Amino acid sequence: MSSDVLVLAECLCDVTEAQVESAKQLNGEELQELNQRRSDLMFELHVALQGNQEFEPAIKQQLTEQAMRLKEAETRLTRIAGIVASSLEGVAPTSNPQTYGRRGRLTY
Image (cartoon, rainbow, N blue to C red):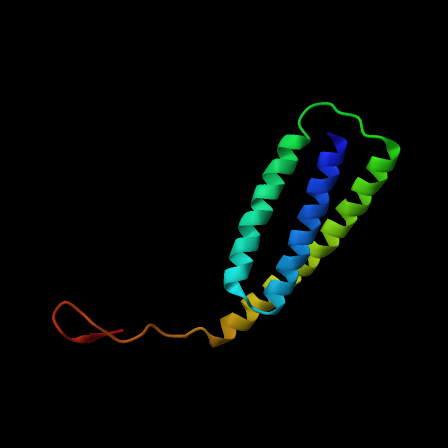
């Protein structure tokens, strides 16, 4: 059981690091797929950690390393998301577009 948790933690780190790379490349489609995969892994890990289980010291050490790796990847992902969001704010329209209303006149 503890090796399953370790495998899930490693997969979660891999997916999060792949998210970082996808976000850098602004690859939205791949990022959505990775988001779904990451969500699934988080759920699996949550379920696997239910109960009072003890881990061997070696497994604990490896899990700690994976937790630090995950934290670093999440920090990078958060920074990239913030940069992208602030960049997109600059290109967003500042006024409402002109459209035709119900009476056939331009509205703002």
